[in-house]
Image (cartoon, rainbow over all chains, first blue to last red; front, side, top):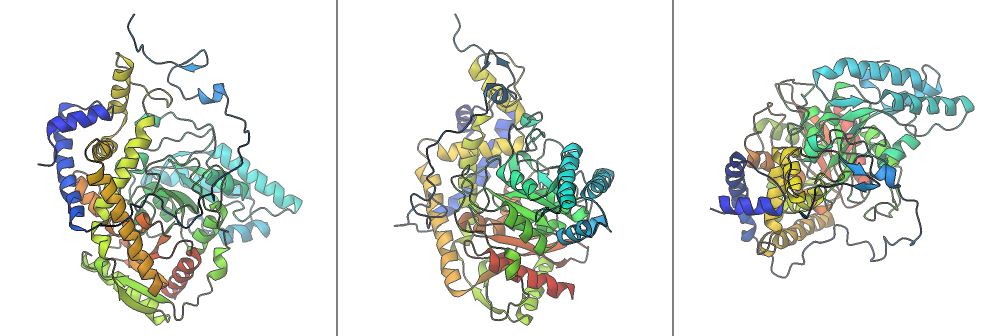
Length: 99
Length: 478
């Protein structure tokens, strides 16, 4: 087994995902099968291979630099327009600390 | 005028000859699309006000004698992961059901600047994660050629709309095959350009090192015209390329004599016989046009699925972290602390496939697993890119299948995620290498299901890709 239900619950915590018991069972089985397939990567020798962190390395290091100039921002009203709970120019969230 | 088969060129000729106005065409297109949408549910919503005002601007330009632009009056459908200012953009997710973007994607701004008329937003797999469009929170799309079958995915709504004739062209997005595979399943042309060719500003991020915006169309020429409009450097996307954008139609002269084509032997073993026969017949057509076809090898291709589903899910788990109930419309009603709010919002908001990929991506990036999974996958990705670089030292383009099989039945694969992932085998390698690839119609099975042929070329060599696709399309028409 590649992944246990305990690990599934731990990963869900890391990902801030509330999962039902049924989802924990299902994802344990799904992830186990997928990780089993992914294990095949160990068959291929990657000794001395640089990881591909950039897709188009042909571009020079400074190709995407831009002038550090001012641009008008969206503005508070527009930025808050999709907020589930805006208030006084801010995003409101539940209490973090109980008094 | 048959609205279902209109091309960009026909729209332009009709407008300039004053056979119809852009507003008349937009009205008729909207009427037709709204009437026929229930057969496929390709569109999630229409944008009549936006379409009619864009069309009116085109008519004004024509009346003044100004150039109305290369997409003058052309109806366009837009995948619902691409932001449209003031026009609801849901990404096929319950989480964004009410999200109204405050700005336009650069591709949207460019196509409207060029005279394009956006008819509406098309359905897709949630956050573009899927190969069938069954992962949309708003229900599936049906294939216009076979209503009991999927249109492919994730850009299934865009492909279905083009195939059904409810738009002339469409925009899709492609991370591992999400333009090419639905284009193949619906019998239309779909193009994934070189990584960085089209700005992703305003494309909802799924896997940033793999995401592309690209065109879907009924003809190779229309796809080429639309790509030229949306391509090019954009200061708002640091990954967009500086390379100049050619007029792709210039290369489409029908002459492919002496072009060297590679046929990857690793791609030909898992095909269903009918799809394989159609690809073989397509290759024979190219040979008759004067192409030199030789077998090539892409040895790392066998590891592409594992590599892709590590890199794409790792990036997705990070990109989707922003949907936490604070900024983007949906928040769980469940009470509790801030941390509870995050967890409930995400647990209730995301569908099963997004959760599965967030879980996989979080797992492969978690402490102790990074080197074994993510770093290993990045090295394998380098080997896949190296395979292509070697192949392109010998050949001008690569010809391959798009999918191991034609459109499958709705519900057939939804309960087997690994089988669904494995069906992306032929499209994923090109995505990992960042090279331009496209699907061009190659024929139909005995049941009438379309099969697409994939053409892949070197970085920024879209001209060769389009030249070959156009010659193939012409040969098939004769």
